[in-house]
Amino acid sequence: MSVAGSARFPWVPAYSVFEHYLVGLRRTWRAGVFSSFLLPVLTVLGFGFGVGAYIDQGVGGVPYLDWLVPGLIASTALQVTVGDSTWPVFSNFQWVKIYFSQAASPLRVGDILAGHLAFVLFRVLTTIAAFLLVTGLFGALRSPWALVTLPVVALLGLAVAAPTFAYAASVSSDNWLAMLFRFAVIPMALFAGVFFPVESLPDALRWLAYVTPLWHAVDLCRAATLGVAPQWSIVGHVLYLGAWAAAGWLMAARAFRRKLVV
Image (cartoon, rainbow, N blue to C red; front, side, top):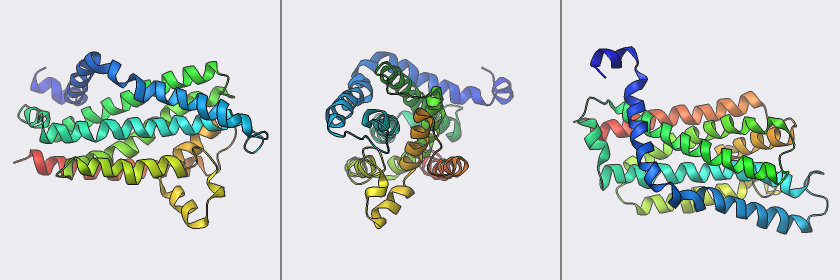
């Protein structure tokens, strides 16, 4: 497309970056099926039917499987987001250096960043859509509002991906990426209300759970799939996740610009 055409449709350059990743996904999608889809489904079977069989009263009167599924939806979205926002970003700077090739074209830093973020959100949405289909077949979705989990996980994905892009663009070794999983992702998945209510945690850990973006997405997803009101304000959840996304975008744009603009 011409420069004039790009000016008329400013989203086109970012879409070309997004399309680049889609072409690559057509060749590699099979490798991610287990981690992004089959593993969560096996977790549903193991925890929902296995552990859930020993929880007679469920959680708050809700069968454990039905209570667990929305937490796994948000947790799966988190893990897919971080997985696609760490090593791929680090590799594009340090190993294959795709970002530098893109920056040498008429693409701007914002186009490169927006296109890659859009691909991460695409991965999250397609993974969760398949997850919803399977859990719906298990009868674990109690309300048609469950479809609202898709925009919720999209917002969670942006809130997590943007700062993770900034982090992956700034570290000098991929060892720092493994540390992110060890000290941030795993604790979030364990203590942000996915497997048990955060109210059962000590006060200090409970407030740490509330600070994480994952808890806010879990609360919204659980409200949607159960057809009940969330524990906290819907507007408050959205604004909080939006603040993470906006701050992350600014940090990522700064980190990308520092490396790509000479």
